[in-house]
Length: 341
Image (cartoon, rainbow, N blue to C red; front, side, top):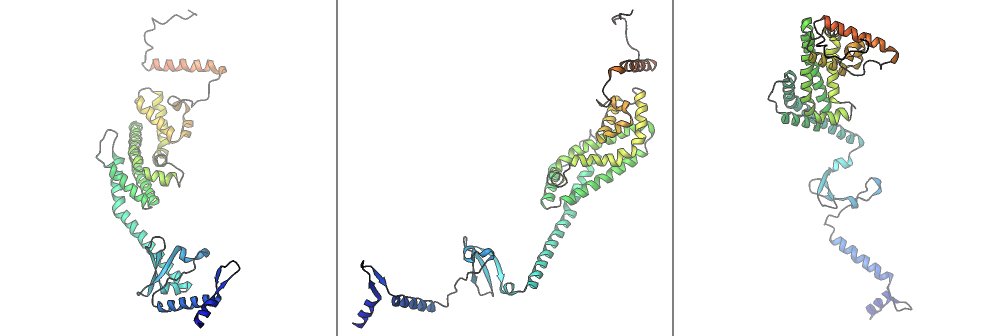
């Protein structure tokens, strides 16, 4: 009966006949839960750790105790192990944390050094051989070069973040080649200088038509994006600096002399050299405007009406010089008589 009375005291009935549990019932329920927790105290329970930003660790992951003296961070969404944190790492002072960061930096440095060593031993030697063969070929030659293999080496170097090193090696290699070309031109005879210069310029331009495409990744992801330049323009500037500029003072008088004596040099050679010099350095046209105006349009200033008699006099002078050098004017019998005759 007492038990029944006690139980009846645990339930209260309001005016709507709704039963409400008393506080004594809640106390007994809490005690029973505590006793159950005591019975299962040997089972490891998850511990929620605070994380930066105030977000509870339970939302991001749970730390489970293990027998290895450490703990492993488990992803709460996938349940996969993402990292391992030792107890010494958790309790380590800031100095120890800084030491670990130094170790990570050293590891990255060693990995980077290994990657550079691999570049020096494997990638660049193969690229250097291919560049040598492309630089010495003539436009009429057909050298067997695996462009796909060169393209693959360049792609790997760029992906391994050796772009700056590769660009430096490429420019140094081509600079060394152009210095040899300049030395060879310096030993040329004056009568062969224009022809030899044209061969060097034509051969180099043809080589760039093969070199620039296979270095496309280097050009796109380093030279254009970081240096804001273009690979072909840079390599042509190397020719201007190391070959053309060193010999322009010797070349220009020879060109003027050859232009004054038609067909002393092949017209195609003259056109190739003059146009090549203008593409390398347009300012060089001011050294010989009459020469460059014969091959490059709009070099001279626009014609002025007041100077028409002077233009006619120059034209007559040119025709007379051609006639004196053995170039007849042709059959004039069918020419229409002028109004003055």
